[in-house]
Length: 118
Image (cartoon, rainbow, N blue to C red):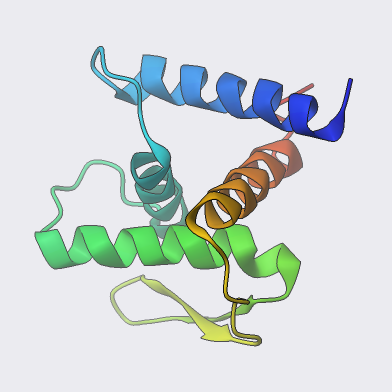
């Protein structure tokens, strides 16, 4: 099985699992999955979030999944419990499709590190 096929298969597993658990009948997209990762990293599941907090949660999700790639590093948790990351390296200019593949690969790696694919 090629690397692209493996990524697609694992991505589909992640999407299916999260959609079944949180999608309320809808298939979750990349942004929704990044939001859920941000919520997981924040550790506050039973909370309603304002619009700006939702954007911040997506940012936390992005930073967390790209951390192993050397783009971000965890910095600290603020007084409200929000994780903060510092930029180590700017992302290279990517086309939309390349950006999507990078994010899917990073999310699959995030779930793989938790033992999801055992």
